[in-house]
Length: 126
Image (cartoon, rainbow, N blue to C red; front, side, top):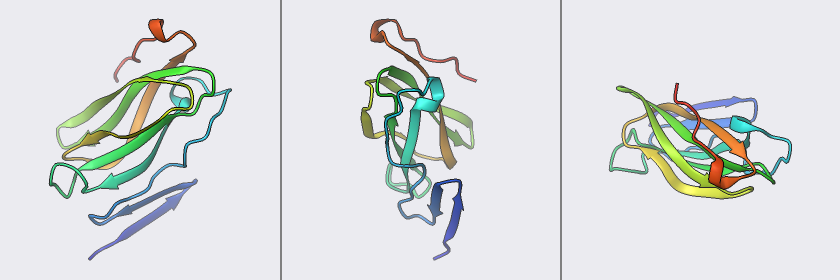
């Protein structure tokens, strides 16, 4: 089995059909805003859809005071695939909800934050 290990700025990614880890464990940060509050971690490869190239990720809202609404963005051969986070409460962790059946690389994210969950829109996709 071929194994590739990349360690950079606190991120760890192991690829080879085995579960992978990327990002840091969830923490709360009252001063974060927008996308900086969206923490993507515990990225796993080959765990969904019966495919070796599936990518699954857990995510959290690192803000201790603001709600978050955003997208986990997966790169695929067909382009970007956006997985909505739905509304994420301050400090909330979401496990196993974001995945793609055929992905490439490590997912990224975009998000909006705010104190009023009833008036929090999704960010523009780009």
